[in-house]
Image (cartoon, rainbow, N blue to C red; front, side, top):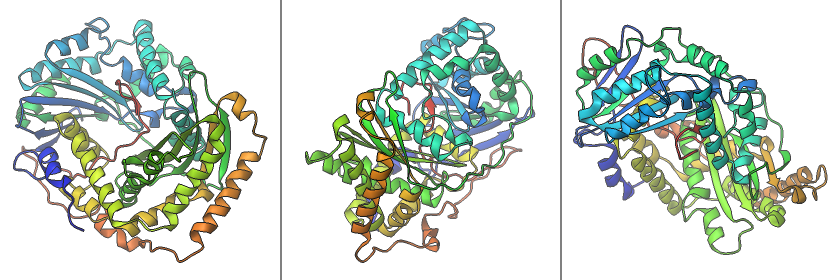
Length: 514
């Protein structure tokens, strides 16, 4: 397949300078077991300093939901030396900015500022992480922000329904964690619990510092060693392997829209492949064909004026343990039954009808442009490097381009059949109480099964399009060979890297929730 026009743009944005791969210049483990990863980017006098802590929703118990995001919001709020808000004010005074994110397996904190202020910014980040003040005042401020972000995420039914789907798809496992935590569930998060979470997980062995920008790697190591010498010690957190039970479905759930949630929606949720896998790559492209681009199937129908819905969205999360694909149609509350048919039609079409060369070409271009935009500065590039390093994925950015470009229409058909299987789906219909009360118990389940049988028979009745077999995924496999780069300095080794699969399971602690 010929390369799409987006590739020159991609090369300029995520392959800065003369180097073709976003590989680090140095990976070093300090004596206190903090890992330092440095990537030199001298195109602009800017530096991103990211702290990645192995502490996320994966480490919460069911009764303690909200601990990860609550703790992340406390970090950088106040320290034993500075009052609430002072740390971030000092960062802003340096012409810098700050962002944080509490995710499934990691929480991350990013200070981005002019390279000349690297030392000061690093010290402020180190103080926020090693000397965090966690008391009733700070926790109240932190949880207030977390609740506000949750209200934003859960303001519409097509996002709120994802919580229900995740709970059903991954019952009894950490993957069932909320897409965003409803405000009332934060009531069990106390200063004592946050202090314990901070003490148990915010330890040197759980910390990886990723520095990207106009810096000297060896100088970075020296300064990090000094700034974080007071990081508390402790053993790295252990995590057992997940064993999910087989799903039998479709499982249909009727749910009234929560307080402060508006609208109505129908959603089909499925388990997803793991982060970085060949299947995740193909499924990402399939979502672009079905939902993400203006020329995708759902958006074209919406633009025709004949759609049974008002908004179509694919929300996906790819984690090292698995994940969730949620296909949602927001609709008028009186049109939910029609939206059910539209959603099942999209799914059955994806499993049984051809994907054209133009559809694939546009999907590939969409993925490459999306990732080029995400990595257009040091912050995005640092995040991509960090996730690849932390998750042990091989491959560099140029290999990612090769993997995406190797996708074929039959690869997308194959993952549609494998993952978008209504026999293993959770269907959630969410709407106002008056609308939901009109549906009798068992009616939704019967309607979904009937429509699935009708549309499935219609699309599978004729000759079936070809789907790729397992061995055919080799060109897009994350095991593709890549060139390596030796670590500079006496100690440490250089890992090999692939792209970041962008998930939606994270509960954002910045202004843009996912």
